[in-house]
Image 1 (tube, rainbow, N blue to C red):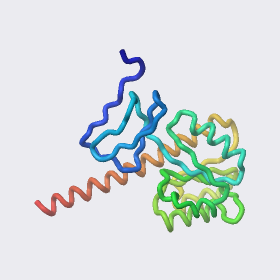
Image 2 (image 1 turned 60 degrees about the horizontal axis):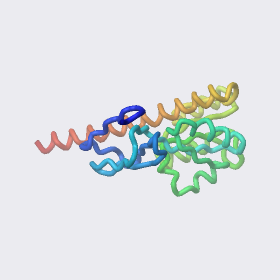
Image 3 (image 1 turned 30 degrees about the horizontal axis):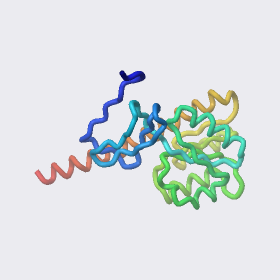
Image 4 (image 1 turned 90 degrees about the vertical axis):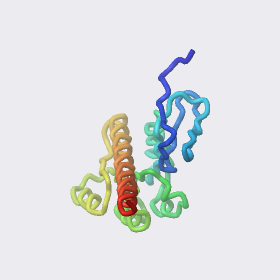
Length: 193
């Protein structure tokens, strides 16, 4: 018999966005749903995954972030020590979210945010910084940051809050994209009726 949580049903007719990945808790394997076929082998329970790029010039903090954020398997964290290096990544547009420090050499977090918005649109962006000055918060929000989170305090609580903000920003973006797709389909059907 089967021991563990029941499989979460995933209806075949639903075609997810191609970037949606699912992680198998039991077999520690990954699968991508393609078209109407569910390509999930040996798995009983699947969680959505989030690919996140974290940019910070503090290598210790990048390691700590990886430890906390990847703990439950929902977030896959990739890192870059500088915003200029992150901008050179060919995979940059494929991330579900970007987390960045404010104070970094060569390009600060606000300049990085502006470049992301200009070149890559609405990828969820979270400014995660030790600088808590009000003008930085206002500038971040005015330039399209989804969230601003101040570093410091209990790391367990801090990274739990960061994980929550990542999931919230990504799911909000996915919902807006799904609504746009649905509206386009409706308009197409209505205009051809």
